[in-house]
Length: 173
Image 1 (cartoon, rainbow, N blue to C red):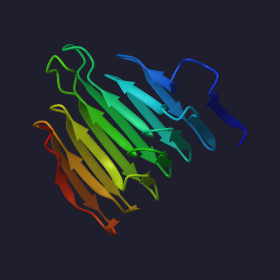
Image 2: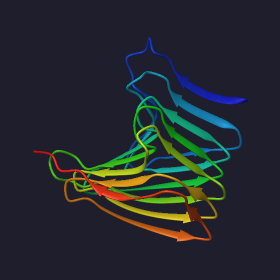
Image 3: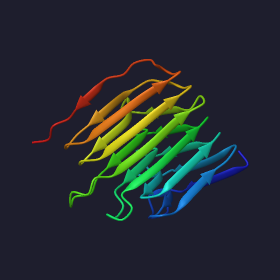
Image 4: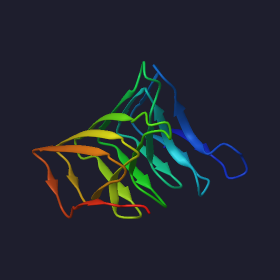
């Protein structure tokens, strides 16, 4: 593709892109963002906005990671339109609150033939009190929604299909 942003293994940074609080990133037609280190994330969103159209986002672990921002900007918005998100050694989309108890809030729209692929079979993983509100429009998805640590997920399908799905909660001792 003409627009490619890649992070190579030799670099100590583990993110293809980071969108910090109050900021936004728009990916358009044919853009690829990849974190190529085995422990990398394609894009990390922290109290920010990501809009991707006809693009590909790949992470060594998770494709898109949504983390808690500050109390002033706790919510992130991710809009995927005809976009592929891949977690090569983890989940497609990962939502996680912080250790101090601030839960990440993620408003996610997956539309127009977008796909979510996690190598672990998880399309949406919500942890540490995170909240995910995901709307799927005109897309066919396959995978699990996984919740841990008092997290919640609301997934709404509109003119969409889900091939195989389950909702599971992991409990850590």
